[in-house]
View 1 (cartoon, chains in turn purple, yellow):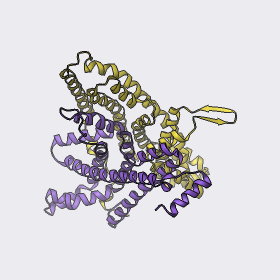
View 2 (cartoon, each protein chain N blue to C red; view 1 turned 135 degrees about the vertical axis):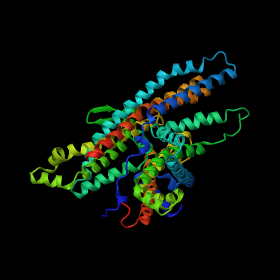
View 3 (cartoon, rainbow over the protein chains, first blue to last red; view 1 turned 90 degrees about the vertical axis):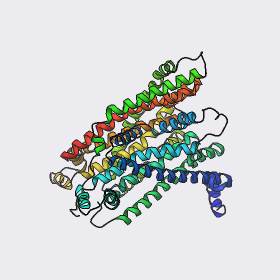
View 4 (cartoon, rainbow over the protein chains, first blue to last red; view 1 turned 60 degrees about the vertical axis):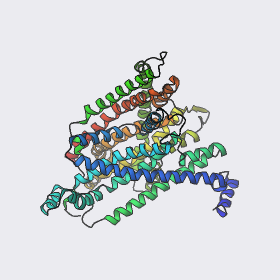
Length: 248
Length: 278
């Protein structure tokens, strides 16, 4: 990679004084790539867990249990109406501090590191939004469909599996895409607790090389690119699921 | 287009329509807060540090300061929202302009500022703007809090532009033609015919955006501005009492919740009211 590309950016540096050091310096490039990998991994892990949480929450809301419904509602409202950064700080400093301040834990490595807390915090946050998204999707399926399924002798689980889930998913995909984009953007907050994701890697580079402006441009381009890839994948999926005459 | 019932609009959530959550949640949080305080108190006593004050006293000592910091967050959110709306409105008009270059410019700006993470934009503005501006012979100082307001206003502007566009386009086409038939100019049509109808549809998403912005204002603590989160962390550090972390962070979360949750409820109420008539 550090052949002609490096020459190009070296030329840009000489000609315009813009030092895109990750393309020129192998060490910076490695750090930047590592940051990018961490961001992608963090995003994918959180997407997975938040979707699982969303499905679980939406299912609990549809059960008869008052207690489960109340708990899910409290969870959703609590996470939607408090600042994500304070949630992260709460988990990492307060809960994390609690976990390894117990007896005999002094000096040992913390049970869950910054990366782990970021996964937990962001998954819970995006999961709270996903609960509502999946729920609204399932609710938007007309009750006549469910009645028809019941009339055909489907069990509750079968109705979910063959009627509610496939139709609800198609209805709520745009909202899900939106939320997942927000999730990818939220991973930058992990910077605040020192997780070596992309923003953190970039800040390390610019504080050594003093190329704040160039790193900012690079960051904006990379994040816009990541979001574009995610949106592209989701839209492809949406098209693949499209049923003529059915989806809006 | 088909008449299949699947096309019916997504209904507001029953989970939110239910008469529940308002008193339950703050109560539950307050309970957790009290419990964590009691727990902190027991922790302090178990370690037998007679010289320290009780957890409750420490909490009461810090609460006004943290509340002051929170009020600064609210102030920043109001300023950013004002600036963001002022910038976003013309940008939204640009998005529905007839001239292709104007539309392309609007779309480029909107997409860019909507897709970049808020924190990166905030860094961008904080680091790349000078601390004072020289315009002619005039020197305008740019303190860091003013820069942070601008940094938060940029993504707000892009989101406002998008919701302005959506609301304007949701007004049925015959309204435009009717106004044109009455010899209204394009700006006149927007001002006198379209906007009065569109404003109602803009309000709920605009309030939603405001709540999101208020929660995002804590980001300014990362770029070194003293807000509620900074003060909370300083309070914990200065007392060197880690057991206070849980109650103090919960207190801060509760403050934001008490501010943002009513906004979210009001947004839903408005949405429902406008939906029936629209």
